[in-house]
Length: 278
Image (cartoon, rainbow, N blue to C red; front, side, top):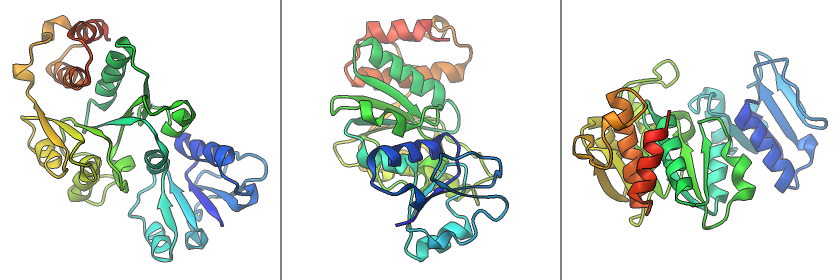
């Protein structure tokens, strides 16, 4: 079996580390493919780099795509039709993670909201972990996780695009047009975002902003229980209590607080984190 790791940034490296740690795949059967000719790969792993790094992609059995490489690329779709399994670090993490996953997406505010949820859970002495688009590959924390753990994942449209599983708790922030330089069109961008809820079960939950039209539409596409958040009716803390400036930051903090409260975090712990967060 030949495996391709498509793109060798943080996520590509996390896939290689995971394969080296858990899979019995000879290194000579693992190929790193990247446009950058100067990338360095571990001894024994093969490298294909330069302008034609996607040539003959259809000869691989499994392809792990990095988020920065478009799923819709002709070479990737040709390989998929030829029988290759197209995966990613995020997709692999969802398949293997034993813990509860809170996924956070939106056009802006993902990092702030994800970090606040994580800190509120930690303040409540929960075994919480933060990973995803925020800078720490999810596969890197996989060995630490137990069934009782909680993982907060910041998820971009590129990470969500080919997911076939959704997080147990989906958090949909404000969504509006973006990334039109990478996605084929706005429809593709919104469809990628919607994967955060599309595969949920009825016992799962979806939090969304009541006043954001596109966020409401995305939230409606899943089977999880819908929980609308209206920052104008939020009472746990006020905008003036926060060190973060701006209505958008208050709105995202209200979302984080609502999610944390729903998971049993006390209002005291929530307020303490929100008021001290920069």
